[in-house]
Image: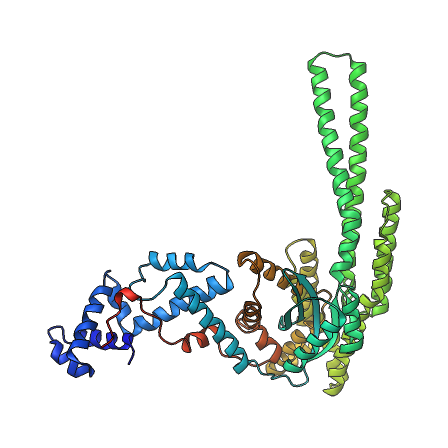
Length: 523
């Protein structure tokens, strides 16, 4: 029986028998009379506040474990808050008489929680995959060392997140091989930037299709046009403002109209130039948005399935428009950014055919009747796809466009005969399949970029990332962070529930340490 349990027994006895004697308390709890006396004195020293009695009860003790673990887990480990500040927090809410929460004690608790998190991964993170194919994203981020990240883009499950000294192909090959063997999934295609090591990883190690990241391709266009149009528009606006001030000053001074006319003509010319730049900027924005709207398995204009060849042709036409715009506005493409994007277009578009092949493989294996297959391809999948695109796109012109497409696709789904005659369970089953299928069309590795941002914040708040903390952060990402639908990345990837990570930590945490000043001496 530990000290906290002894104190709890004595507290419970005197709660039930307020007039009881120490002799009775010792007999009831199985302690010596001296030990019972010391425990009663320790309880008196601890109970300094009106609410202190609660922490002596069984319910209060259990809730203290939850409170301390939650504070250290969410704010310390996940949020990067230092242990001295957390110790101040516990002092402010008057828990220091019942729990050992000095910065050093909290650091030990944090270490214990980290060990439990890694233990959770060993117990529950064993591979449950059976023939799961994923669209993976890969990238590197740089701090004290290089961190390599390999992630399933649909579920968000991190397959590998390791700290290394380099990012060569051999390092990628070794880490990816270990990770995939541990998790047991197969990479169907890899989405990333055009790093040579990643291209080689896809072709020679993963034996899958390599898809250039559409975001990086669009960013090349932004780097060519965005800054130049913005700088010219801002410069002309400053000159227009200055011309307005000059004309107003000349009129106040009563200068000759002939002198003012010259400045008015200059103002007219500046306005015309400004309007021309804004027009070019608008056309650039429209072309940029058009490129994003073109790379989908369904035609945005006609809402029907499309092929990679159609996507490639449309994107190339948009690039020709951008090239003409650059020539018209004398924008020198010294780094040949548009040429770089053109080289990537065939591989970017190829994912459309790859995705449709994936759909066909499933429907063929399921022996779906032709009428139902047509409904799935041309009615249900578009509805689920545009809804998904709308939900994960930030508010703006693109989201508005996706919302319109989603509404039209939903109307077509509702009006179709099969939608009304299918059994509700059958309809739900196909909707679940379609939702999973559209999640496998991934044009960018933005989920990996988002993870890079999380690691950057962690590196900043915690003054570098320790290897142990990186492993812990990976387990938390996979098993502890939930989306709005309440699922973790592991549940989305494996399709099976896992025990709640935080609840598992609390269940295995054990008793919290008592502060030294309120301990009863050992008997």
